[in-house]
Image (tube, rainbow, N blue to C red; front, top):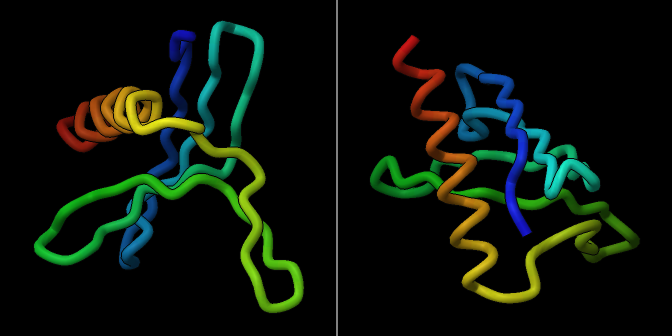
Length: 85
């Protein structure tokens, strides 16, 4: 699996720094990924979810940590590149 496209939309004035649309292998798009600032200016990505009754249910998410790290690295690389513009 390869990340083939990352589209970042910057958001200012919030802990949600950006929203991201991600394309995998030019075949699958995941929309609504958020880049969130947590303590000490650390950034993490939050995959889309939906509230159902009193729970949040994941719509899409990586199954293992290696895939999550790879996707996060690609998203944050594009985000940081956009900030430098």
